[in-house]
Length: 332
Length: 133
Ligand SMILES: Nc1ncnc2c1ncn2[C@@H]1O[C@H](COP(=O)(O)OP(=O)(O)O)[C@@H](O)[C@H]1O
Ligand SMILES: [Mg+2]
Image (cartoon, rainbow over all chains, first blue to last red; front, top):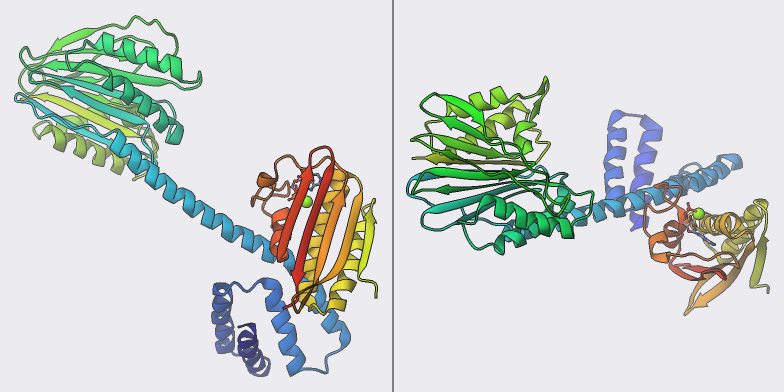
């Protein structure tokens, strides 16, 4: 193969030394594409140049020939750096594929089905910033009650994702939708406290909605407070509930509160990926988020969460910095 | 015919002597300029590692034959501290020189065959050979 390259290069070189046209140079450029494709290293290219020159202008003085040997020596490391670069790129590609697989495994593992309820309309969206999601949503339900967990690992990527599997395991060990929010947080807190390193923090919100009484009961472990929209007064308020982040200490007293939902009232649960959206001008404030939600309050809960996501995505110029999760419970 | 020769590596200048020996032998075997440069670069890296990490050691050059192919074998040996994690050292991008495309992975690329034997606290022997094709 190098023999064939040498012949081609000699031709191009001969033409160029005679005419110096742009066309000759263009041919030279195209030739380099072939060289790269065939993994010809820089030092070999110089050697090809030298050999071609020896045929075309054998009368050149000796010091010119020696100079090429120096240049070959100098280029050896470029050749090595190039090869190293190529293997690193291949490695990176392998990592990327592995991440994609891991992300699929995660999605299957953490899959949760949005329940269909008679008098409650539920919408849910959860979009990771990178391949792996550090936000977690999980539904539990029976005929009358829906339980919803929204959790957020402080931090992103693989460590966060691994942590999430543990919460899922904890949730699966619960008895059902009717377990009280403070009991749920207590159970999960103990699991997390035992198994996670001190540098990992998880915030979590847990709420249950009883369709027979239209009462939403909730507790929070340092999580972003949900928004409550009251249709009658057309206003938003925050659902506050004090409680320490998961995993800090084993015995935490969580607060539990309840609120009664009227027709068209809704609760918006989220992670800080929603409240900490940033545009060029700085943080997008809560008022803006509320306005966006309010503007679509008449749509289905699912349409609402999707609209809010796309609107915020737009405001951030499609640069999502954090995992984004939004859940809406709306009384029909 | 002297088919075995070696250079002791004690000072930085001995690296040049090892290169010179390697180049002479490579020329003698019939390697072209590019391969000569590759072999001497490999010798440079090995000799430099001896100088930097083991203090002193030896570079030995042997002309070899494999079937009807001729070639060159470079053996770098020292009684230095040895290498703790060979697998890591052979990974691209690990060298302290970082991304400059040399170090031991570079030596492996420059030559056809590469073997490393090392015992912690006892020393390191690296053999690398290249055949003339
Ligand atoms: N002969 C040796 N004796 C002990 N350690 C060595 C020897 N050669 C290499 N090493 C160790 O392996 C590492 C990697 O070597 P190398 O690939 O040449 O890269 P660099 O010299 O740029 O660090 C060195 O940093 C050194 O710790
Ligand atoms: Mg080195």
